[in-house]
Image 1 (cartoon, rainbow, N blue to C red):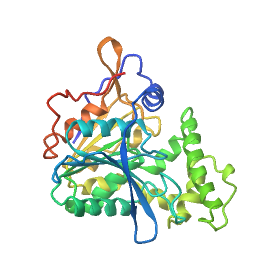
Image 2 (image 1 turned 120 degrees about the vertical axis):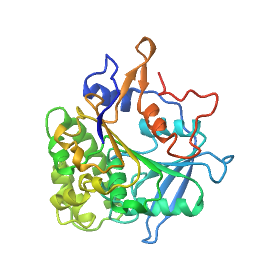
Image 3 (image 1 turned 120 degrees about the horizontal axis):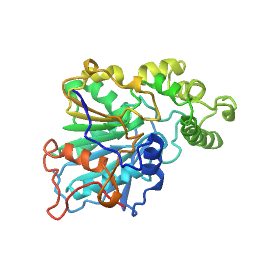
Length: 338
């Protein structure tokens, strides 16, 4: 189902770049206390998790898995904001740092937009640990692409009760081109610099020992993905990576109730990336807004104060679909202001 979103941007944040930058850079959030865990993998690598403290919760309390975007982490404002809402709803919450995201991993391979195997491992481990807990997941940007692709691959076998994906690059080739246009090149430069630092650290540590081109010359996604992402992760080139890792072709196979939130003015991609209604399965509710930027969606509250709409809409979708996910009596559970 493809429908018009109810989101309305703050009157002073209608510009997509203002939405994107305000939500990611200018927002203030108090520290979030978490418990770290390292999952050791059979291939000798690891995945780092950050858990909300929930020692007093029942074993069958709902569990929400949060998946970050490219260069994201627990420090990402969207991740911390949602985890605070998860805690307010009496649920367990865990942020999955994709392989190599928290710190350089042990193998030359890294996380990427189509790596669903690691997500499957994490969810299987969580199901073993909490066999009666309802599982939900929320993914942002790259993490949303991973989540949608995983759900499509699993079809009716997903362990998730419901899922939410925000600002997803459904077609990586289209997005790679869009990031080379206008102001979006600044986002591209920032993201590639972060990926370059990860690769350079792994080269210094001897984790990557194969010859690589001069990383400083890789200034756009097609060249970086062709020279680094693809060969290190088993793809012939960037074109094969984009074709196989994009979530768009998997949407029709999703059987898990899924909310997708997207803004037509997302500066990380162009409007043509938005799937058509016939590309969606019957279990997908795709809410499209004209404004919102990339993982922005900042509305206005009283006296024009910012309201982080995603932290109202996502819990609202989980309520009723994730058994036991209910606000504490003293919480109004609205997007945090300030």
